[in-house]
Image (cartoon, rainbow, N blue to C red; front, side):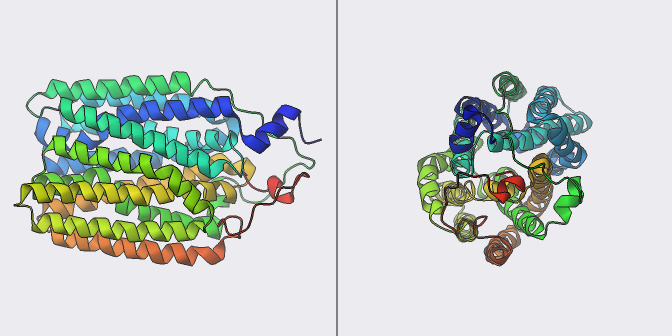
Amino acid sequence: MTGTVKQQRQQRHGAGGPLRRVQIGNALSAFGSGFTMPYMFVYVDQVRGLGSVAAGTVFTVFALAALAVLPLTGRGIDRYGPRPVLLAGTALAATGAFAFGHATTTAALLVSSFLFGGGITTCQPALATMIVRCSTTATRAHAFALQFTLVNLGMGLGALVGGQIVDVADPASLTRLFTIEAATLVGLALITGTARMPAAPLTLVQQKTDGPQGLRALVADRAMLRLCALAGLIFFTCYGQFESGVAAFATDTVGTAPSTLGFAIGANALTIVVLQMFMVRLTARRRRTTAMAAAGLVWLGAWTMALVAGLIRTETMAATIAIVSIYALFGVGESLLAPTMAPIVADLAPTRLLGTYNAGFALVKQIAIAVGPAVGVLLVGSGTWPLYLAAMAGCTLLIVALALRLRPHLTPEQDNAAPAVVVHAIPVRELQTAA
């Protein structure tokens, strides 16, 4: 027996209703994040007047919260399922966001930032696990790409609207933004946290449960370790700079106004929305490692535009165009990564450890995003922005090299190099991986 007719249909096509609720909840919470994330640096540095060092520390604490919550998150998902973990994460994040908007001292901002970051971090592997549970091997890349599109559309719209509301001279305007973020997190809990996940498919043979457990199993997986090293560099170079290093470079070095920064982030989201489904079709016919290497080359162009913006910063219009181009090129690279990295994690993960693998991947992401702002803000704030741009350009070249070196460690199926084969019997691979 392979399960009920409903379960077999879910294996072929995915669970449409629950998946839609996951995607809608993602988009709603992203809309709230768009209000706040681009303006956290400005909020701490200028609105509360605590300086760029305090702002960088807040970003670092926000990301380092992952070290405390993610080991527990992975075990919780594997033991209790993704829904209870998601509900706990949204409650923690909503509390942190609301407190952040009302904090006035460095200590209060650090505590609320830890709660905020810990909650957001807890939600990420839970949502990724829900998408895997609601999709199939054939539909998974499209599901993750659609999630990425909706998240960026929500963040872009939030950034555009938030940029018009932000008033550095009016702290209450920022308080309203963080309150809205807390409300959208509650919306995520109500819409997605109550979605019923499809039942796990029945199998002919009891899955093997001996061998390493938890994070030890992940550490013993050499292919996963190489993917995590590549992902860490990707998150450090792009996402770790997106809302901190590049934002600080744009506002402090180039002199970009906060409202213009919001427009640039909106351009990033628009680029992703326009290109994402095209990139899904493009990457469906190519190796995933090739797509990740191509993203590195695109980001090299983004850092080149940053150099142009720094050199012509006295020419306001031209420098503004260059700043917007940075974020647009980031979007092109991100749209290449959305259908590739998360599906590889799902293909590598044993079914019993899907939550652990997603949590481990999220842990790497958060560590990179913690280190990224510290490095970016430090180099830009000290006036050594040419060194900052050179370091980021070097990292993008290393991304290309690591992506290509990952290829021999993946199976053709994991690298999307083998044609899909329809098999009516349960293959051995179904008993070994999350796919």
